[in-house]
Length: 147
Image (cartoon, rainbow, N blue to C red; front, top):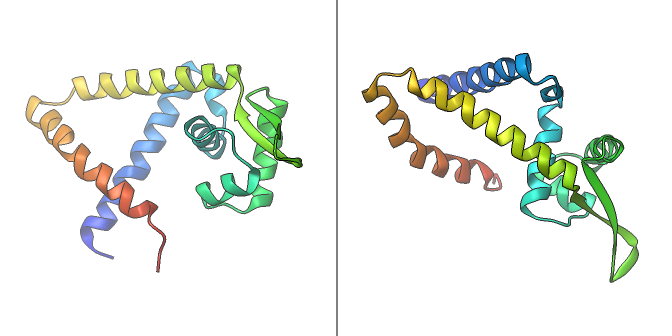
């Protein structure tokens, strides 16, 4: 592993942990596991989805996704609907409450990150902003199937 890859891995891990820890102090519901948040985000981007399609999109085992979905349905964040073409198939969507939760989650994270960005020197803030496009491309490459 290159030094750059090791450093980026470390920074991303610490960034996620720091953000999660700081927001949980004010928002106890943020104890929602990241896997559930990511599932909600994916469903919000591409509704409605079948469990198998959702599992493929998240690169998780279908039984893992099924368990997460059950928890989110019980919490009122996801709804299960029928498929007009095949009544045996369930289609999943984010509930209105789930959309509200995602919106609050997004706003609070933006607020936290914005406050932290505001504490950086102007040149550091510019460096972070310049890096965003490259990081977005990195995400695209990570999303590609591995050979």
